[in-house]
Length: 269
Ligand code: BGC
Image (cartoon, rainbow, N blue to C red):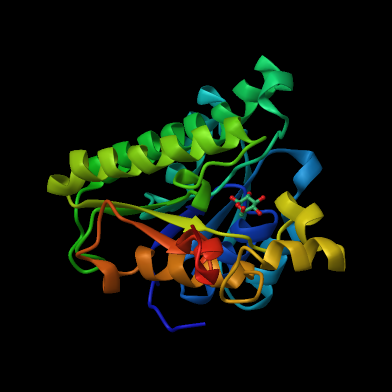
């Protein structure tokens, strides 16, 4: 893991009980940040993440809140600010899929995905921005008043048949990132996204757990391997650190080349 110094900073990672969120929480703690490990509820307890961070000498607390619930998000941010005094880094990671061909996609599944993946990112970003604006820049800590990293997907730009709700939510995240970045750059708040490709996490287990599925998946990945959660965590660290202080409103694609139209590598049309 690269050595970034985030000591004295408070970071909140949503959906951090597993996958990319878990790896990101561990990486931020390794860099010295105190980490709030958000999870949805009792069914996805992050106790092992919190224990692991504490065992390595870091600071971590678990905070349960459904990111799509306005009151729950506000209460979580209030508890975090009461406990730590402020917040410096938000990683908007919580997300899910409810896949179906669109002619069979229920309104409930459409709404659940938009609510968690897009509205959840808005609600958490809004709460973080309010705190960043209240506190302002503390020069000794960071030239930015706050940093927000939104975990999007290659499906913010690659259409995905059978996943209209998911692709629409991630397309929304792309313009949420750019708009927030534009709106708050003058207040020294940086907002960036990361667009992961296929990463070995619970959300896409079916795509990697059998050899046949993995072989099929890898035809879409020019770099020839599936991503690891740490591949994304390392990019988050950079975007959360002052090494990227002049970067705002961008989405970093971390996908082993999945976005490069691999079919055209063989000549195409
Ligand atoms: C999805 C995964 C998928 C990957 C590449 C991600 O955003 O959550 O299920 O494997 O994109 O298609």
